[in-house]
Image (cartoon, rainbow, N blue to C red; front, top):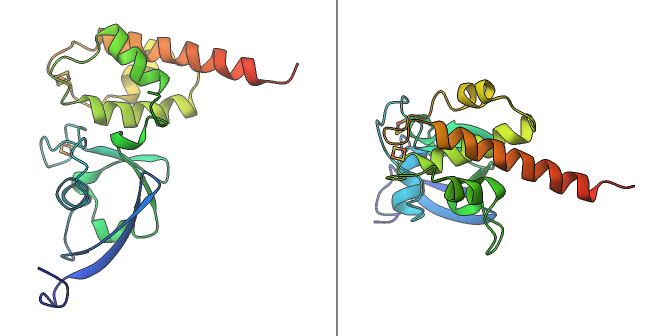
Length: 171
Ligand code: FES
Ligand code: FES
């Protein structure tokens, strides 16, 4: 159904993972629904639908936000990043690679939200303690792993990011 046959719909233009998406949405459409069911980016997960599990987290202008609590129309003009936009071309990020290497996913349902929160966290805090990592992901619930491997993946990713940054600093 188009905006012309549904006068209650509003045209929305989003920037998602560097591309432009445009469609007609209800004024109260959630960003989570638009991302998953209109833009087809199903890596963003729906868990609790009430702001408590964190698996719907995306980045909006670099800041992690819960897409189940965000109105899509409020995101017009913002840069949205979902899990599909974390890797650069064929290359996974350090955090994604270490997640896999450490076995930090079991069912994987929490992983996209954790990675989006985690990438922003490591940008802010390149040398985190285990406690700081656990605090950063306190809003992301994992029912499977017990978090030990997740913290290990964060630490290994932080080391790799810092080593790569050191390699690019002028002598
Ligand atoms: S689905 Fe958004 S916080 Fe659980
Ligand atoms: S790996 Fe299953 S919820 Fe985290």
